[in-house]
Amino acid sequence: MMLRTLLRTGGALLQQSQRAAPRLWVSPVQQRWASSLPMNTLVLFVPQQEAWVVERMGRFHRILEPGLNFLIPLLDRIRYVQSLKEIVIDVPEQSAVSLDNVTLQIDGVLYLRILDPFKASYGVEDPEYAVTQLAQTTMRSELGKLTLDKVFRERESLNSNIVHQINTAAEDWGIRCLRYEIKDIHVPPRVKESMQMQVEAERKKRATVLESEGQREAAINVAEGCKQSQILASEGEKAEQINQASGEAQAILAKAQAKAKAIHLLSEALTLQNGNAAASLSVAEQYVAAFSNLAKESNTILLPTNTGDISSMVTQAMTIYGSLAKTTTNVAPKEKKSEELSESSQ
Image 1 (tube, helix red, strand yellow):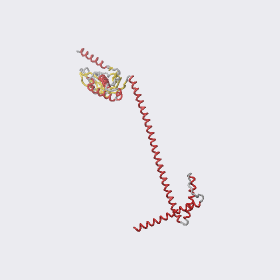
Image 2: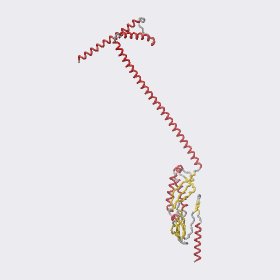
Image 3: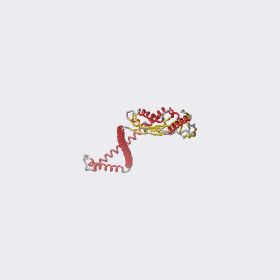
Image 4: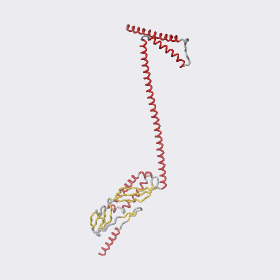
């Protein structure tokens, strides 16, 4: 019995020592060492943010919480050590085909956290490796739904879709995916050259459009300036004509008022003594001056038969004046008589 007990104890210690050695999770990009399994020393101190899964005689017993814990040697064994911190995993680079048949090389970063240590220990053999493979397959399926241009524009929606798919599948593993970020997207060289050409063509197009818009705006501004200048010039000409017409009207009115005053003064002067003699003298002077100006204004001259006899010319002018004066005097009594007849009839 003693020998059998020693053999069992030695085998258990050997298994524990083998499990205490660090275990390497192999990944094409990442090599992460797992926490070593501690030995059962009856009194154990569990660190914060760690969960130790204990088995009693090969069957799950309980999960040790942070702090002081007691275990029975030989019967209780620490089977798994799970970290409750947020875990960062590099997703290896992989190839994926987009909707428009472009092969892309994409790698990313996965952020995980273990919520249930029991499910993470017994639900899957290697939870991190399983989640990494799930992220790769989900990324391929999601990229197959998008074209190359949409992959660059909709990276955020692509990340959220991958996180949703991982959380749906990893719920039974006690793991929650917090977020997923695409690190790099590598495009084939020929596709990259065509994208560069497309970018250059788009920039040239924008430059041409901006230049044409600038020319259009310049032409519109010039036309608008010409229009405003013509409007202002016409308004100025209109104002000038209005001012000129107003000035001419005022001048005509002033001349008419001056002439009326002159006629009034002349009529008063004629009523005075020797007024007729003065009028005859003025008429004679104007008559003679008119004959003197005929030769200056036109080539055709109408002369009386006795041009050398000045006295006869003055006499003729006075005769005309006298006849005009008689007609005015005759018109005045007739007007007075008509007024008297109208008054008597009334």
